[in-house]
Amino acid sequence: MTFVGIDGCAKGWIAVVRTETGATRAHYLATVAAVTDVIAAPIAIAIDIPIGLPVDGWRKADMLGRAMLGPRRHSLFLTHPHAVLAAETHAVSTALAAERMDAGISQQSYALRSKIFEVAAWLPNAPGPAWEAHPELSFSELLDHPALHSKKTWGGMTERRAALERAGIVVDDVSAEAARHAAVDDMLDAAVLSWTAQRIHEQTAYSIPSPPEQIDGRPIAIWV
Image (tube, rainbow, N blue to C red; front, side):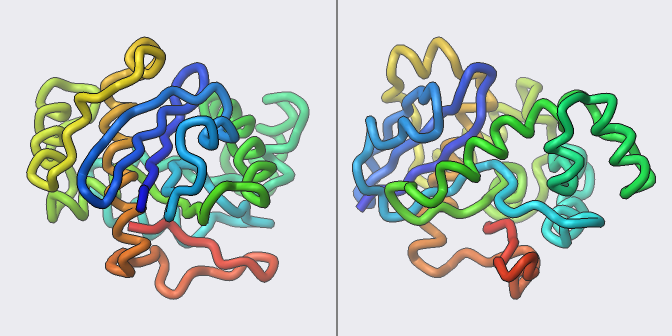
């Protein structure tokens, strides 16, 4: 059985593929659909991207997840409604967000829409079941508390890497492309998501909220 954690990077995605025996390898994906080039039939995929957009208001998953993260709460972006993200320009998106949410939308959140829509188009043909997850929530579960340091710092990197190693996850087998494209935090994030994918398969993971929120008849949650 293989478990996959996928995290976005500047020019695509980083996928960490793990087997139940602990063998781990990291790959670069130009598109999320390219995951089939590195693993034909994963048993579970955990991906750091919103799956399911609100019609209005904020998703319960994001609000509850932020509350659980405490000092790391700003690492979890709030997911804007479909109409806001589908706007053709950032200016139009900001106006819609102000009208619907009483708040604007950052350039970073607006730019994320391309990956959100990419994953939404891919999901019906994904090679295995895919679940929304969030690296900082996964690390919080692995550490038994929110990470003490930002993942952008040396302290944050060593804190997270040590937690992964205690769980038996060592990402030393890295493809040349992944090594070239991945920032340190991208690699750590994809690795911990592979741990969450295994937990989902083993039914030891839980959803935020629990039970998942229903939006347009679809269960919406972040899995940890």
